[in-house]
Amino acid sequence: MASTVQIPLVGGAADGDTVTVELDSNGRPPLTHHHLGPEGLAEAQIYELESDEPHGRPWIYTWRGPAV
Image (cartoon, rainbow, N blue to C red; front, top):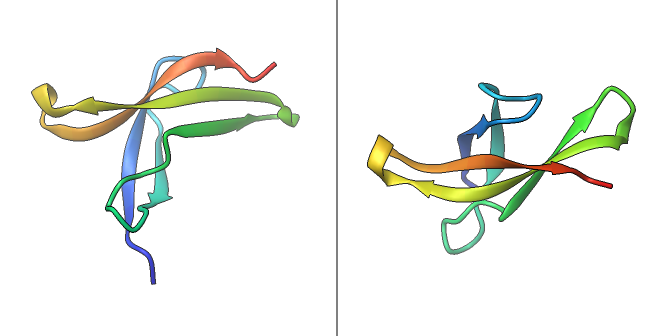
């Protein structure tokens, strides 16, 4: 079974939420997360992986905008 990690979402409509993602074979999460809106992919928001070591977290997903 693959390892998972919870990563906080920062900014955008999902600010403050967390997502659980699978780590790859190198122990790294996906580079982006598409947070689905009420209409599914039509209203998805894109979050990009960033390091957050200065704040004691290995990673965060930062809002980059709508997926249009």
